[in-house]
Image (cartoon, rainbow, N blue to C red):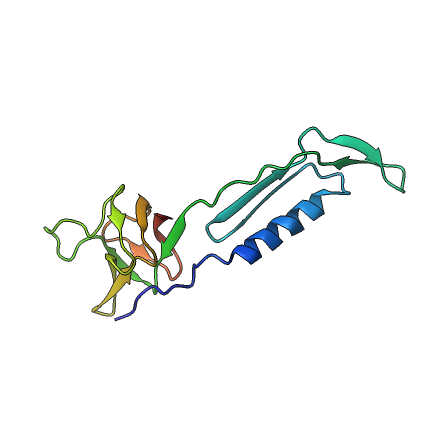
Length: 152
């Protein structure tokens, strides 16, 4: 059986470094807003209350005076392989998880069937199920988000 691993653990230093890089891109340019995302993390950096400062070429550029950064959008749990997504162990059984349900790391949250093999999909962390992205019985692609968990 295949399981979703722990490849979504947060690396705080990389998040800080990415935020600093995005902010630096905004400074000294005529760009006043940058939107970017990496996995479950999204940035929306804007030059709020910026002032126009001429650059050496004589063109005005925006200099940010405040920056807004969005909080992470939850941890997506993705399909470990191409197959059929099942929310429950059998057609008339209750689903493994529902929206709003708290899960512990390692709890089974779904099955992806591939070539008659049932592949367990487990929660990579403890948290609350925010959203389920696929219908029961849907064909999913490798890496496709199956659900989103808000980590604790």
